[in-house]
Image (spheres, rainbow, N blue to C red):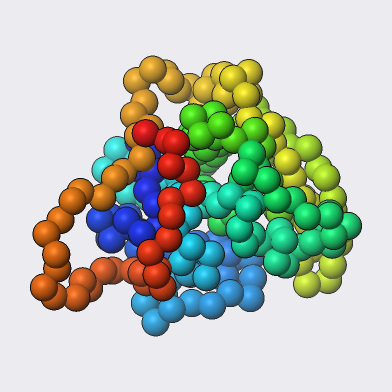
Length: 231
């Protein structure tokens, strides 16, 4: 059901990575009209993808991309600090106990969309628990707060604004604890004990004699994983 993988290891899942980046293009660039860069292969990839984020990816029974989100610690560059600091009155959100969630995608497929959103949020909440993270923060359109509430994990709005370009935006905070994970599991109809949430680890390989030709843009340089405590 889930693939948990760092950006540096995405080349181990080329089809899934391409599906995720293409779905992001359709949702954020084409449907929402965000001013985003698209690579020659039609994928929405930004410089935060080159910072070795942790991706939480939900797959269907055939292993295809269904939903995903991107996690980065707020101790490094984040979208809320770099582009939306006015939502927090320029108060910096910077803590090893707070991670930022961005590029949340959930396929809109009728009645399953809320359940899939709850599954994705449950996976993210579980990752946070295991890593000792206490809060997630994100900037999202206001209407998405209704989706979060419907999934069983309502957001605390810590700032909001309305602009002609972006519409009604909110800076949201979620507390990560067992109670919220249990609420998400019930909404998602998940048997938590049967789900494998281990992060993919790149196997040790012999030195490469040829340059890799991955099906996605690789990071500019190796970076340290953001959640080394997760097994």
